[in-house]
Amino acid sequence: MKLVPLILSLILATALLSCKDNSPSNVFEKKTAPLNQADFTFHNLKNDTIIYFEDFKSKFVDSRNVEVWLPEGYPKKDVEYQVLYMHDGQNVFNKETSYSGTTWEIDEKVDSLLAMGAIQPTIVVAIWNNGKKRFSEYMPQLPKSLTESAFAKAELKKNFGHDELLSDAYLKFMTKELLPFINNHFQTSKNPEHTITMGASMGAHISLYAVMKNPDVFGKAGCLSTHWPIPYLGQAFMDELPGSMPKPTIHKLYFDHGTKTLDKDYEPYQMKVNEMLRELGYTDKNLLYKKYENHEHSEKYWQQRVAIPLEFLLK
Image 1 (cartoon, rainbow, N blue to C red):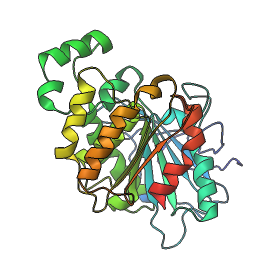
Image 2 (tube, helix red, strand yellow; image 1 turned 180 degrees about the vertical axis):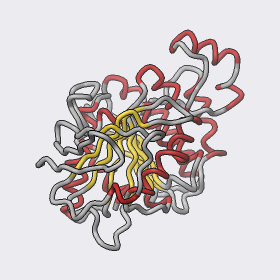
Image 3 (cartoon, helix red, strand yellow; image 1 turned 135 degrees about the vertical axis):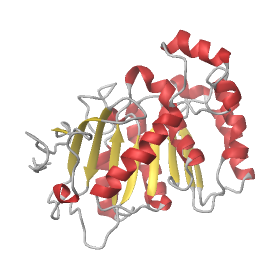
């Protein structure tokens, strides 16, 4: 990918650079330098481009980095781009920031699928995780009777250093701050059918919870290697699914897992979840489940198979 300079007039000393292995950087201070739509004027990009917003501010959760991938040719006339929101964003594009040194290569996967005509025009928003608060931000706050109990708070304090789950606050950050920002500054569709969320492990939990909590915002969820066997909280969250999932009118869900390392324990849990969803009316049209022999719980394997959920959710 070639470097593509872009100037944002209201931000001092900013530059937008694009590279497969090194995300571009531009300092974005949301509260002190609000941007106008004119600052995001693109003219048929000759190369796909990643825009990096450092330290994106929020009143609901801690600030974090956000990366936005735009496909070649963006923005096409009269096209409303669907948006894929991905969690653990530092692992999505850039191997230098990835936890394992391996990325999902989502930019390359989406680019290839677009070239094949397998999916509709899409931009990708990668939301970095918070590190030490990752579990608390990604673990669904259901059922409240358990997640807000004294027992749960004591366990959270012991294991993570703070005594509350933050997934409701994280989803408020997404729906009240990040999504409006993306929709205001990029050429996007605001329909839930075109607003997709995806993640792996605990990122799969928050992706599913986003559809449950905000079904009028998020229409589809990709859940890779969902980490169901969480002591106390995992089974309790599963038990909430029948009464909390939206009907499959416009919603689509993808689940998968491997058979090695952490993934080797997931199948019985996932089978129960699949059965619950089938009883709610989900069919092969809006529910896809895959089991991958010899796949482990890591970015290396999610990278290898992510094209399948991308095509299912974005076509």
